[in-house]
Image (cartoon, rainbow, N blue to C red; front, side):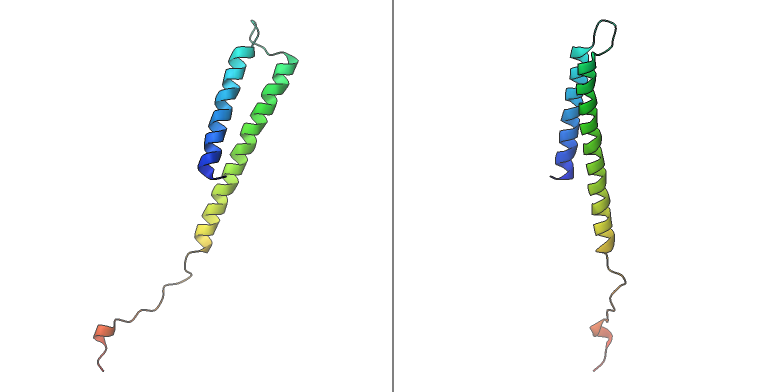
Length: 83
């Protein structure tokens, strides 16, 4: 899965978690024990997706750094050389 796909999945999960809270809160603003457990699981999924996104971003950065040339190649302008 790409970083963009993971971000989209995380955003959808967050919207679902917010909707869950809005629809399951009691009159006093709290959740039942079962709903709290379900919401905690949703939060964990969002956190896990964020960790995977961060891991892939670090991997991309490291790949880019390690794939850079170590030094500049020696180039000679052949038009300045007299034969």
